[in-house]
Length: 66
Image 1 (cartoon, rainbow, N blue to C red):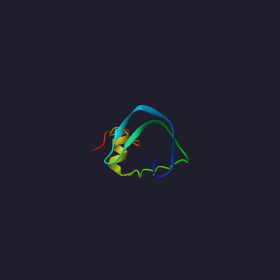
Image 2 (image 1 turned 180 degrees about the vertical axis):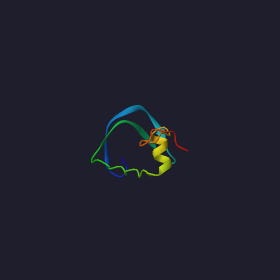
Image 3 (image 1 turned 90 degrees about the vertical axis):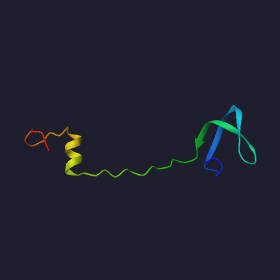
Image 4 (image 1 turned 45 degrees about the vertical axis):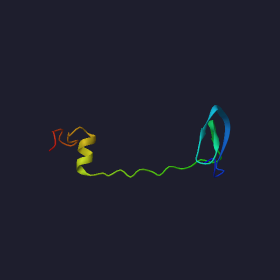
């Protein structure tokens, strides 16, 4: 993010790390220039998923499922 100019480094650690061709200071505080939205997870709503969510108890009858 920092190398693509999407973030600013506000503070650095005292140590650095070595890449193949240069020595890079370790950032300790990074500020993003804009919020990156995370993809919303898709939740499957199958019969098995509902029973697993409810502890294998039918919400209509109150009995244990398969």
